[in-house]
Length: 242
Length: 224
Image 1 (cartoon, rainbow over the protein chains, first blue to last red):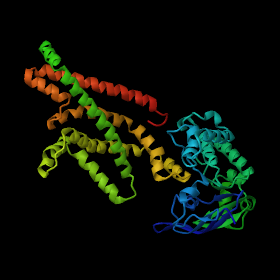
Image 2 (cartoon, rainbow over the protein chains, first blue to last red; image 1 turned 45 degrees about the horizontal axis):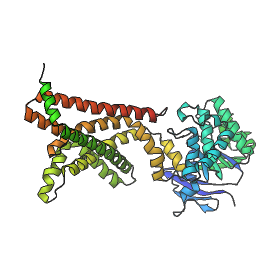
Image 3 (cartoon, each protein chain N blue to C red; image 1 turned 180 degrees about the vertical axis):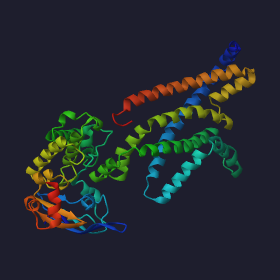
Image 4 (cartoon, rainbow over the protein chains, first blue to last red; image 1 turned 135 degrees about the vertical axis):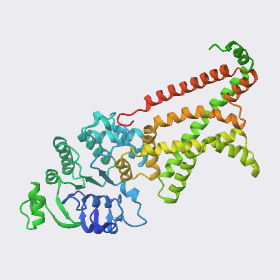
């Protein structure tokens, strides 16, 4: 049984169908990257998986539990899914350390000292421990994203969702973040990542899901999709990117 | 210019115990309506975020009514109007209740405006982490909107102290009422109201200093 099983997921906004029967699996320890043209529904897909957006129909099973069931304990399931946003989404009124410990203290009911120890461990993993007392406004984009990843990791999630983790960063900072995500990939952290960044996709993915007009057009290893794919849409997309 | 301040001084000395007591009433009332108004404002603001359209409409109606109505009208309604239907409340209760409803509406409006300065992704991140609506409000929304609205809330606290003087119109003996009585008795109108103004200025200055200290303590880079 896969950790995440997505079946025939549909999301419509009014008359516009953004996701049109998306189906895929994500195994424990696996990393998949979702790519596709702008507006193909990549971010909406990620948001539907932890119900930040309500799917119109279809099924999302996470760790054997139906996320879309009316009786699903969505908040409990969300705690098992680390979500890293494009714009970092750090809590501006809290220090770096408090950003990471907040959910540990409030949701996991961890004693403050233990939460701090855990947070510092994750911050050190992201080379951000020395910024523990800084506020988000004083951090660079790359530093903010590293804190956001530490915040997600601190909850010991079963899977990490990344929504365009490098798109708000300049090339140098983006490479730093790619290196860190690659480190997680090599540690077999389960990752589902939406990105436009081909460099990121190549370095962290077991396979790429190519989404087009709300449908999975292909799912394959990066090297197979990147080198002259038979599908002209895919060939054209990666041709433009590389 | 000139004025007979020595004569007023004699009057003030004679009435000192009752004036100090009246000044205490003013301070007490100001503190109560400021704290109540802040709690009420947060509560009303929370309700403006309700998923229910009906609740939001009711709350917005409440805010509009109290911002659009002079406070004195409402105080008179409670003081002179309620006894006609058999409800008689003390001036203190009416003052506290009347101000609570009025100040809560203003504070809620300040907080609603500040809420527009929040980054939606922060709230979404909290939701994605598994926080409940109540936890998001308590841990993310409230600490930020209170800081963003701090200057407006501080102005309201100053306004509360000054506005508290109108409760003398519903027979509540606070500082202004005490000074009004001295003015009527001594005919030293200029001198009495001049000193009254100075005392209110002093009270407001204390609040301003306290607010500055609070602001310094709670200011966070990137969030003001």
